[in-house]
Length: 183
Ligand SMILES: [Zn+2]
Image (cartoon, rainbow, N blue to C red; front, side):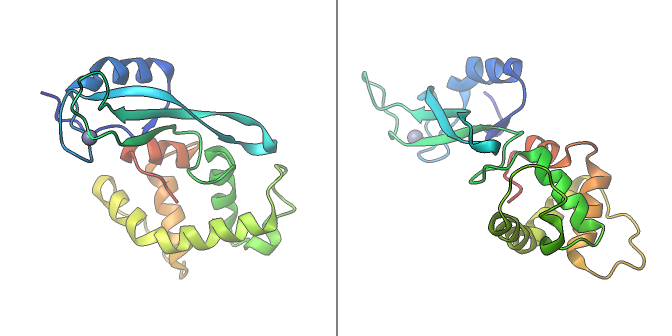
């Protein structure tokens, strides 16, 4: 009996294969039945630069062919993407790093080479700000916040905490580790 929670994000194809093979052991998050989950098609959407591409898979609790699932679906996404946004986790990490250096949305637009609209930068900024309590609660489970003496903005404190827990593309690593969207 698998006790690990169902995945929402994956990083490598090997990980996806492993998840696919063990899928029948998981409980459906909606109806709590075991043995009815299958991979059922792909999720597509726009990515950076406006490319239409595969963003992940759809998991289906099957109610077909005598299966007794609830018929609902839920997404399994690549951790290098950001749910509901075209921006990649890599660019979001770079954007948050700029926020933590005191550059606010109005100044960031010209510094990110990738094509992100000013509106998107503001949307992301406000969404991240709103999500901070949730992000901090998760981070505190694995690492105490570092000493941010002199930093008064909670948003900057959260980003420093995030960077201290995960290196590199920290947004992708956060999503992969906690299996939740950062935004
Ligand atoms: Zn179900």
